Length: 362
Ligand code: SF4
Ligand code: SF4
Image (tube, rainbow, N blue to C red):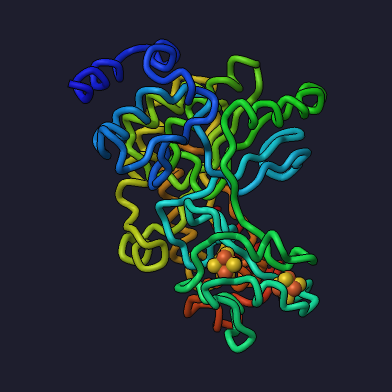
């Protein structure tokens, strides 16, 4: 009987549902987010209604602006990611796994733990407090992530911030408050908000609510996307609230895309073509972009193929993003290894003459 009632409530306005079934949990309920194992405060899995009830209940009572978004960080006053002065929202979680990812700490949806040996003062407080024995100087990464349960006790105790947590959950209202602090800068510089990541569309509903609120407040919105999403959802939930879209096309060869990014590029290219068509009579601006990664994306064959592809779709610009090797250190801090870090070209900045060569193909 209870399951049936909750199913019906799912179709109602969220606030109405909240008031009618679980008033006490309104302000502190957990987020309905991909991969979340959270449950409502005060309701246990072994409670009277079982897990099935919990699922219906969580969907029913979450007011949209209280939904949590997993983010890496919010960065104000940026001049790099779009026109004017912008506030950057870095979402956490990405469906791709590019081997060169420049924000590797945003790949995982979960909050992670980071260790920076350069600021460690060797007090060993963390080693002593860890109940799982996950920390050891014998481990080149210091943290055994198979043993670590992410209790973050060591982070709390670390006096030098050598250990830090990476990522946090904020609700949409909190993020809007942060964005609004920069409103005067947006107005004087024609700036706005940039949704970056990770992949913002990985948290589609939350992104939609956030972008819609920005639009209602007259804030310019820019999305940086890898293009791997369900088109219908994107078209209905995201596109109406975006002014500018930066769209990554990394590798044209499907097999190479799968090898270096973890998935093939068919859906990404299909979505790009649908997007070109969908915005043809609108004011939405679209900029395809390609990161230059030595011997992977930065090959004559690949850059020429991408340039030809966008030209055929009558897109006048393709932006090439210069390679930088800073991601290698970020990878180390969160305990990620991959075979490509051994390559000499990957460990240094790209030469300007090489950048110019690739630019000449565009
Ligand atoms: S987060 Fe907890 S389990 Fe993981 S290393 Fe730190 S203290 Fe140990
Ligand atoms: S608590 Fe922090 S500073 Fe002390 S040994 Fe651990 S990581 Fe280093």
